[in-house]
Amino acid sequence: QVQLVESGGGVVQPGRSLRLSCAASGITFDSSAMHWVRQAPGKGLEWVAVISFDGSTEYYADSVRGRFTISRDNSKNTQDLQMNNLRSDDTAVYYCAREYVESGWYHRAFDYWGPGTLVTVSS
Amino acid sequence: EIVLTQSPGTLSLSPGDRATLSCRASQSVLSRYLAWYQQKPGQAPRLLIYGVSSRATGIPDRFSGSGSGTDFTLTISRLEPEDFAVYYCQQYDSSPTWTFGQGTRVEVK
Image 1 (cartoon, rainbow over the protein chains, first blue to last red):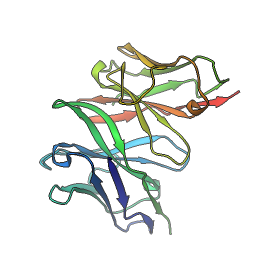
Image 2: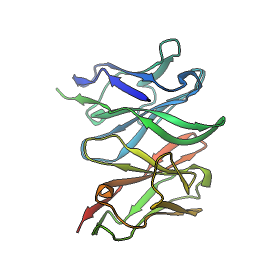
Image 3: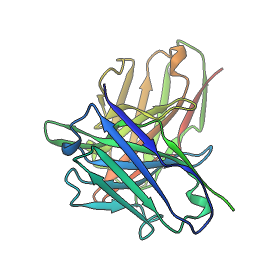
């Protein structure tokens, strides 16, 4: 079955860095565009970043552009999110999610999600 | 950036009732790219509807989506106990940007 499992969350001071990872199984990873979506405590969902199936293209939300970097390793079925210069408003559960693709058509929705990893930015 | 506004914020209903959730966009949305999710406490979201009205794999037919342009609706025809949750709409635009509505909570009356 499909599994996306995030790791790397924790407590970090403002201005510091953290790297999240997502390990995928049960999907054709190297054909999948992968995303990070976050959810602040008690709040709604916020899209963070996407990386294309081959890693050639990345896009970011305005709130993280220039501070976060998404990457992937198709040989290991993993994607990462390098988070630099963290701020208190980056505190959230970070979800790894796959973009739904069907017969080569990207539906721009997220069909598989990991359970999430909590990042707390606090001094 | 397209902003999605969901209403109502909270819907208080009983099992067996019909639920109608609204999602309004600040600009016209490409219809292929409007989706709905269900989220229960402590869980990741689950895709219910994509492309405005297509049900995701395994989603019961009591869930249906409709709409176009700036106004979209998720309807749950008869609420089951497991349907009480928070629901989010989500759209994609060509920036590219993915945005979510703020959510509607469906609670037991």
